[in-house]
Image (cartoon, rainbow, N blue to C red; front, side, top):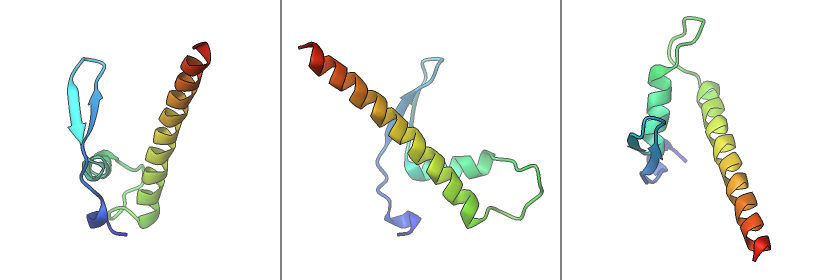
Amino acid sequence: MSMNDFHDDYFTLISTEGEIIEFTIRELIDNEFNQVIFAVDTQGYTKQDKIEVMKNIIADIEKCIGIIEKDENARLSEV
């Protein structure tokens, strides 16, 4: 699967300042690699660098899913 195979679905966040931010996964990754500055001067980013960023994004998403499931289960058990 290449980056071109991703759907460009938009995600929305509200910043701590109340600003609404919309982005696609592709934009999130592009932004990450435009902003990250490695301690060592490198020529671009390796495939492993990109994989690590994706793993971190997935871990954050899984954490959010777990929180939502826990909250939903607690709500259902109160009924």
